[in-house]
Image 1 (cartoon, rainbow, N blue to C red):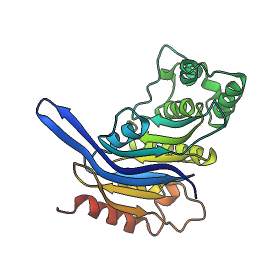
Image 2 (image 1 turned 30 degrees about the horizontal axis):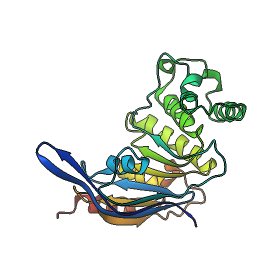
Image 3 (image 1 turned 60 degrees about the vertical axis):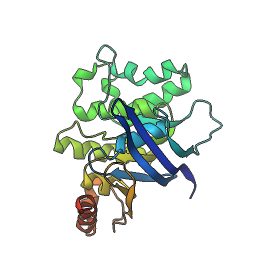
Length: 255
């Protein structure tokens, strides 16, 4: 299986008036085609910092990040980033929010319009494309934000707690939606979450980080005996509880 991301011996430190704080240390892992990789860890362990480093918002202190998503299509981009909040602008329609990234990149084309129209129809937002974001439910807003990201045709998506702003019932439903969409679109993803159940049900492998400075304490492959895995079905798999207990133990084990 081909790698889409390689991270090798990654370090990152913040510099403040009080001195240097090491956020992540000696971090190495890979992400493969069509794989969903989860990252969990204590608060302050550098989970979101890792995504910022991958996306290029921060520069590593040491180590290497290689993104292997070369494409001959000039309209495709390597990485997409989905944050905790949907960041939909209220003064723009749903459709205009979705096209914003393409407008900024000067990549709007007839082919992109066809792609967006298809995703709006496929994912239940066609009737709301001229609505304002305030007219959408929380789940619909997250779908709109995802379509905006997918319109850029990224190969690898970075998901930073994308469901954390939703109530528990909506969170499960939207997780199911997003999982299905990404699988159908043949995307790879890195999911940062504080929710152990979410990591197990959404991901193929889960990284457990240590306390700051964050480094990999354990990498756990997730194998569930399901004919077709979805986040909702995964929670009823016979192995689910054992994985939960294992990851819980790793997170709360005394140093």
